[in-house]
Amino acid sequence: MESEAAPYIGMLMAEFCQVGLMIISKQAMNTGMTTFVFVSYSNALASLILLPFSLFLHRSNLPPLSFSLLGWFFLLALSGMEMLNTRNITCLAKLVGTIVSIAGAFVVTLYEGPPLLKRLATLHTHQLSLRGDQMNWILGGFFLAIDCVMASSWVIIQAIILKKYPAELIVVFFYCFFVAIQSGIVTLIVERDLSAWSLKPTLRLLAILYSAIFGSALQVGLCSWCLRRKGPVFVCMFKPLGIAIAAIAGVVFFGDTLFLGSLLGVIIIVLGFYSVMWGKAKEEKKIHAGHFSSMGSPTQTMPLLENYADEMVNAAA
Image 1 (cartoon, rainbow, N blue to C red):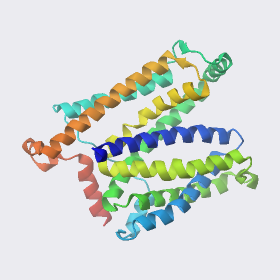
Image 2: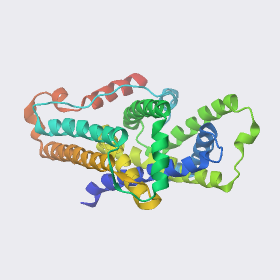
Image 3: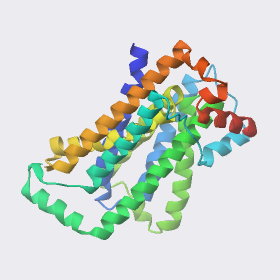
Image 4: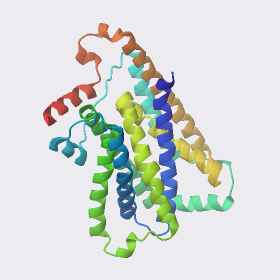
C-alpha cells in the first residue's frame, strides 16, 4: 500500500516545490536579478549537489554511458503518444479528465468573477491594474503555452532516456549540468554587465539555494522517479494541481483576494484530476490481472509511447 501511494505523494511534493520556486524566484527577480543568471546559478549548484549523491547511490549498478546517450541528454526531442481507446471506459476517463483539468486551468487564468474573500483592498486594486495591461497578460499567456509544450516534450524524452538509462539521479544530474552550460553561455552573451552576476542582496542567494535544492534536485528527481514508475500521463496530470496549490497558497499565506473564477477553476481541476487518476488506477488493475490479453495483439494493448521508446532506444544504440 505504501509503495502504491509513494508516486502520488512524490508528485504532490514536486508541485509544492514548484509553487515555492515560483514565489521565491519572483521575489529575487524583483531585486533586479535576471532570469538567465538565476537559471545558470541554480542549475550549476544543483549539479554540484547531485553529482556525489548520484555516484554514491548508483555506485554498484551504474549503467554504461555512450556518446549517443549524452546526445539525448543534451538535445531534447519532441515526440510521443499515449494509449487511447475511446471504447474503453478507463481510456475515456483519462481523456475526459485531461480535457476537464485543462478547462479548469483556463478558468483560473482567464475568468476572475466577483471576489469571495477580500483580504486587502489595496492588493485587489493592484491586481486589477495589472490585469488592465492586456499586452503583458496576452504575452504572458503565450509564453506559458510555450512552456507547457516544452514541459510535455521534456517528460516524453525523459521517458525514452529512462528506458535506456534507468538511473534517475544520473539523468537529473546531466539535465541540470547541461542546462547550466547552455544558460551560462546565453547569459554571457546577453548580460555584458558583470554586476548582473552579483548575489547581493541576500535574497538572491537564498532563492538560488532553494531553486537548486528543491526546485532542481528534489523536484526534477521526484518527477523522474515517478515518470519511470507511472509514465508520462501520470506526471503531466499533476501539473494543473500546481495552479490550485498556488491559488490556495496566495489566499492563505499572502492575503490574496479569492475570486469566484479561482474557486470554480480549482474545483474543475480537481474533478478532472480525479477522473484521470481513476482511469489510471482501473487500467493498472486490469494490467495486473492480465485482462488486456483478451484485447488482441501486444501492439494494441501497450502504450504507443513504450513502442516508440523501444524504437528510439534501438536507434540510439
